[in-house]
Amino acid sequence: MAKATPTNIEFELNERDFLVSKTDTKGIITYCNEAFMKAASAPEKELLGKPHNVVRHPEMPKAIFKLFWEKIQNGDEIFAYVKNLRFDGGFYWVYANVTASFDKRNSIVGYYSVRRKVNPKALDIIKPIYERMISIERSSSMTESRKYLDDLLKEEGVSYEEFSNNLQRL
Ligand SMILES: Cc1cc2nc3c(=O)[nH]c(=O)nc-3n(C[C@H](O)[C@H](O)[C@H](O)COP(=O)(O)O)c2cc1C
Image (cartoon, rainbow, N blue to C red; front, side, top):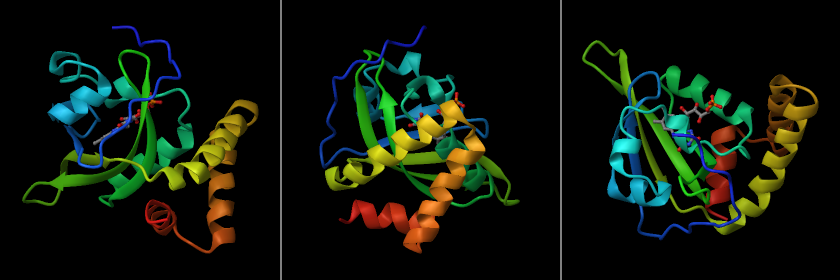
């Protein structure tokens, strides 16, 4: 199915909502819960077996997903602010935690993500950073956009994880 044209209509998550999805090692969706389907405005059959970028929003920097995959493929967990595209064209922001699932031999067999409502104060900081990163990606490259993020973290003297978690607690 072709992706919907993005609109400015926001779907606001409830404090109690936990949007869960599981994927295989390539990011193909193998499970999602009711809250996830409701936020995505999509039925299960449009989600299961599909790559997770079915909810990718064009206003998400590529460098964030690169960082995301580097971490999870390494077996590390990641916390990230993500703007997602609904199937009806609307959008929703989430604070996502993604972890790898391992088998007995410690090999990665898939990934698991739980998302919750974003602290609105965090978004005041994240939005301009993402806008800048996207503009760098358009005019220059993903490497430069990642450098912008890394320099910003260096200036703040925090890791990416500390930065994300601190914002959620503002
Ligand atoms: C467990 C898991 C959850 C993911 N959740 C999302 C998500 O909610 N939104 C999103 O855009 N990408 C999500 N991704 C990342 C996508 O697989 C993909 O890398 C991203 O949408 C960028 O797509 P693109 O490479 O087509 O630009 C998730 C990946 C995994 C493994």
